[in-house]
Image (cartoon, rainbow, N blue to C red; front, side, top):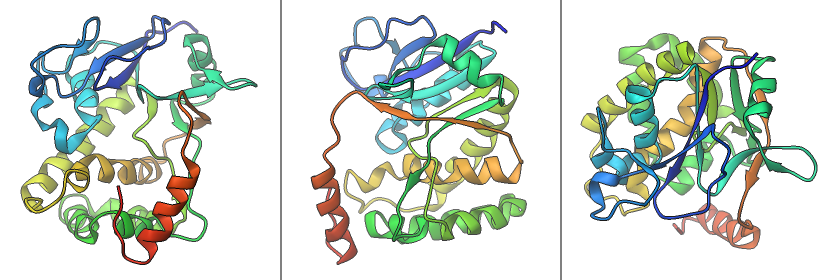
Length: 252
């Protein structure tokens, strides 16, 4: 079934993007940049949180799409990370999304596995434990029905990451309403004044962990697609960083 699908590509610099019409490259943090990216849609038009990009990362594109975009299904990917399909893996196009959405109203990326770490231990080794502590407190206060799923997610060894998804519009609206309510409350409650630039991206990091909590609590059916990286992954560097974090050395 043909439907209007828009996939936001979060971009912070000029970069080649797919010509497929379903993709919409969005300049994130446009309010913070004096020179716009030619041909990209800035995230500081209409109702927006563009000025929060330093702390919200790709979520400023998500918020812009939620408040300003008219589409039956909306998704979010990154300028170097897309949904993929086929062998060899290629960037998914509209036909691929339409086929996947016939299976379920939500598309998520293939899960990321930590194997020897839980979601909780992985986060506190890479970021600040306080982020998770305050997030759990807010869930207990504002929407306690989500606590069981949150606690289960923290004990698991992986999940759907990158803030990537495609959702039917009604589910997209429900998710964004819930997510930003939590994140804006977290922003008021959490003191990040002494965080370095990496750790200060906390609200984007927390959102990655909350997606599965929302999906599970609301029993939303979903299907998965693999992640297509357009640049090589530095696995040796990633592995070294992982070991260093385990022994208490923070690396970026």
